Length: 167
Length: 228
Image: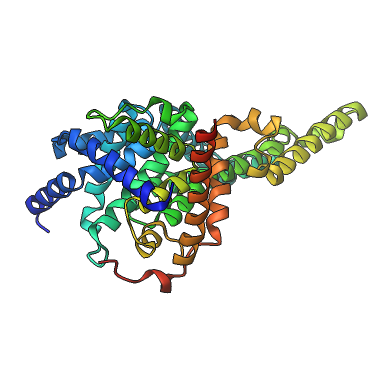
């Protein structure tokens, strides 16, 4: 691919999938500064990996692999530097949802932030409506194991919601 | 709350966030410059210094030792010569491992499936332990390089006992550390003292998570399917 085309393709991919990048960053980063850093790191890796893109995989599969890999490494590095409760520092949604939904959405983000680095990725992909096959391709685990893990994570989330309601 | 509710909640909430996102127009030039600076900043000055010092040490001392072996083998203490050879050889092994580690870090492909790449990254980080272990094996040779023949001819019993105790204890210590420096012992005080245990904690957590996921790593046959 000519360099000019590569530049153009890169910008198109970033523009078209900026939501994906932001969702991954928001899942793994607690504050705005780290989130912006992470997004830039992801963009760098996308640019570096672009010549190696295998068209046998869907673009989103490829993007999720890169984004989650960078995010987990970034998250691990940052958890050495400082450990913080992610959900507590997440900024509120700018254009707020109706009160009830907003509160539930904040809780969902808080509970996801409590999960470990791999479970965060799994549940995010699931909530993004990815099929178990796609999730298995992104994560590198078997389809049946995705099902097993997902059952456990969903159970955990439901319990957290239930406990919160009771309290 | 059922699955559909969870998905609806996630998608509705994120839709609002996506709307509020501005396009990032950071130019590729800035991005790639940042990439270089990021790589350099991740190579802390102490790492660069260690690598250069190790290289200079191996090349410099190695050169002197070879010269001594060729030109003055009969005149130098063989204890000194062989102790220094072992020390330099072990340093050379550590430097080679260090260079391999740094170059591998730089060439990592983030396009790999998440569990597979994360295992590679963990292994890379863990290889720091191997470098440390190699360097620790040098300990006994620092207690033998000053031995000489006259010491054995004219030495006293207390000197032999003291020298023997020092060499044996350093040998024991280096072998003990060589076999015990592993992640399982990261919570021990001596591990933390030697390797700043705090840095290893997230890594150990990740190892446990990945080990748990090991049972779910799919075979290649499962994976080679298009998702399009």
